[in-house]
Amino acid sequence: MKEIWIIGVGHFGTIAFQRLSQDLKDRHFILVDPIKKNLLSCKGSRTTLRISDGVEFLESSIEKGRQPDWIIPALPVHLAAEWILLHLGPKRLRRVPMPAELEALVPNPVRGPEGNLYVSHADFRCPADCDEPRDICTVTQERRQQNMFELLADLDIEPFKPLTIRSHQLGPGIGGYRPEQLFETLTHVNQIRGSIALSTACRCHGVITGLERI
Image 1 (cartoon, rainbow, N blue to C red):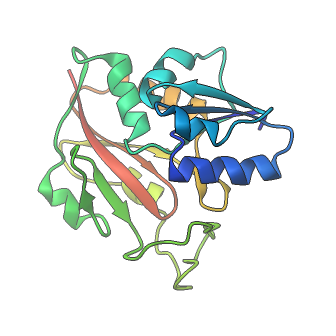
Image 2 (image 1 turned 180 degrees about the vertical axis):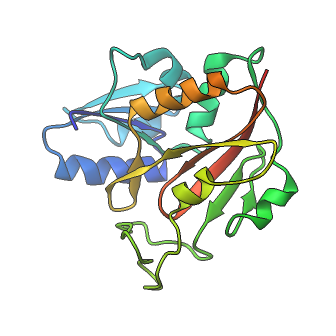
């Protein structure tokens, strides 16, 4: 990891920066947030501060020839879905509601105001420093039956085609993905005609957005 983008510098983005910057002394961080005050709390010699909407920053900054090592989404929207919607535009892709039947197929579903479905193996607040063990829950010590990113990738709910971006653990309570994962997902979206259930998920939690290719 040489360059890390943290998109959204509120509570969770600030925690991500503080923890990773302590452990990774030779890394450069690009921090993105529309609120200047949030950014100034993370000012330092190894940071570049960008006052910007996170989705718009990603669209204008990410290129196949110039990419960070990791992107950490820490803003209150489904970054991957919003970026693909912006990138393709309303003439090629639109948001659609996920069917109510989906809620019976996923654990602890919660509908967001924007129509996203948030899911979790936990029915409690997880510790902020969870290190995401491979097989068991940190809190209950019970065995995890299936990783959330696998569960969402295997969803069978017609006419939606599931596409899932796995969020990898970069530190306790910190998840992110590589730019290549976004471009691979974009390629798949371009190849689909019809409805898509686009998810970002780690082992325990996830968010699903309904999309439709036009």
